[in-house]
Image (cartoon, rainbow, N blue to C red; front, side, top):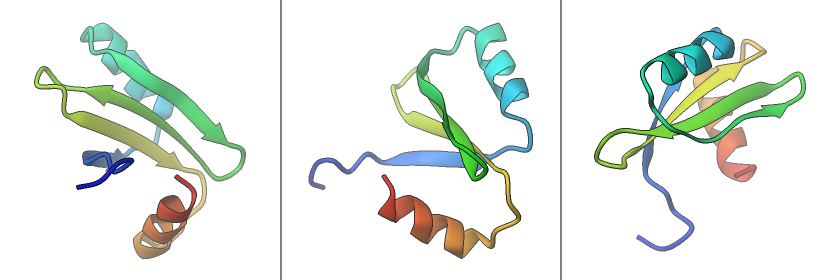
Length: 76
């Protein structure tokens, strides 16, 4: 794998505030975020005890998953 590739797992959420609260309550580090693209999505990065990157994303529009993946790949 070449840089800037960053393997991670992502989970969709309906409420970013709840996710951030849950991370803080459990003492998990917020690596970056929450980040926001107004009217489109919000996301936050954390990691587990093995330093695996975990992303939580909230989409504000009902967009098919394949379109989300294509859009996100282009805009990273």
